[in-house]
Amino acid sequence: MNESRSQFLKQSLWMIAATLGGGAGMALVHGSVSKLGGAQVYFQFKSLMAIFYVVGAAQGALWTLTARQTATALTHDAIQATRARLKRSAGTVLLVMTLAGLALIPGGPALASHLKLTSVVPLWITWGLILASLLAALQRGVLQGRQDFAGLGSMSIADGLGRFASVAVILTWLGGSATGAIGGALSGTLIAMAVGFRAIRPWGVENPGSALPPGNAAPATTETLGGFWPLFLGAAALQALSQLDNLFLQATVPEAWQKEVGSRYSPGAQVGFALSQFTVPLALVMFPKVARSAAGGEGRQAFRWTLLATVTLGGLAALGCTLLPWLPVKILLPGIPTELSAPLVPWFAWGMLAFTLANVLFSDRMAHGDFRFVPGALVLAAAYGVSLWGFQDSLLRGSPAEGLQRVVQRLVLFNAALLVWAVLVSAPSRFRRRGTN
Image 1 (cartoon, rainbow, N blue to C red):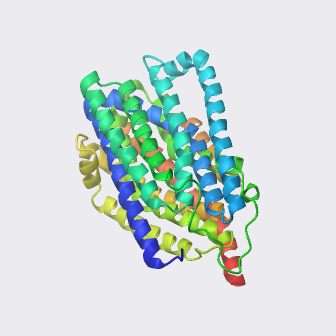
Image 2: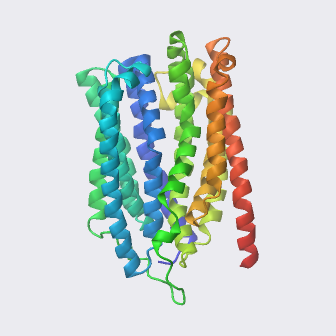
Image 3: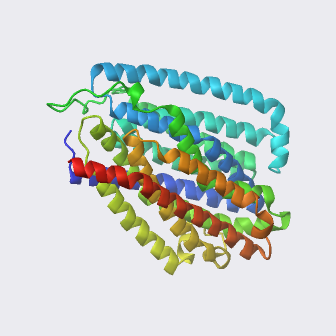
């Protein structure tokens, strides 16, 4: 399959539409939990999801590793090896999550108390959500690596809309609680897995369009193309930089501030997440093309197109949030007072732009098997955690509005530092490659 700009555009537009559809469902989940469960339940739900995002760094690693192995499997032997690794990965996920479940039996009550939960049931459902998401990551990786964006996009839509429908039904009929909210999230993931299975089944793991172009040698065995642990550590660092603020607020804010967090901070964070739905899909389309190019196939222009589109779309969205900060809150979270949440929206918008640009640069490096960004990202994640917990008294002094603004400013500062590090790591490799072409 020859790459063309029009094909890249069509695939990107579909993935943006699919991600927006899934993201709309995710956003409606937050609005439903806030409206049907109240500020306290929404606060608990956000904390449980933050645990899922941080612990679920392995999800990103499995997804990326599987996508890269599938994209670079350009020969029959490589395809068979990828199949075998996929089976081993699924077995490893089941084993590790079984051990985690055994550890949760004695440790669950203490963790539930720390998170101000009334029982351990939400923690067990979160455990199930992590397990299902890890297995779904393998499915998504196969679809992405095969450049089957129709199947990948369908999973995104099913996940978001299925999650919203499940949460709405559970909270309406069974009552508003963190248990019902996180149970709806698990239900949506299971629906997405069913859709992903049907999308993969007709073709298996093979990538019919990945025949080696004439004159190109077969790539090295996928074992040599990068391992799980660099991807896991990199994903963990990025997840920490995007989620530690929620864990920090859950663990440290006074009880009197919890409603303020739900009214002022959480809506802005949700707007930032929604904005990423315009730009992250571009990196999803780019990744298998760049990986295939590095393995001897085609796809050399994908990085340039992705970077340009991310800067353009992300910059316009952040500018719009700066000029009309109340509008995205009114659209995404109609039950939230805009006069409380709007002041923080521009901070989240520009911080998310820096984060997504860094993600594009890191995705390009990972597609080439270059993991030099990982140590710096880990250092930044650790420094970010220290800057929150180590200075919590100064961060949270004064009124809730002042304290929460200082927290989001800290987030933006470290996202900007992440982008600077991404440029420092990526630029030399790109310049060297341009000089050799």
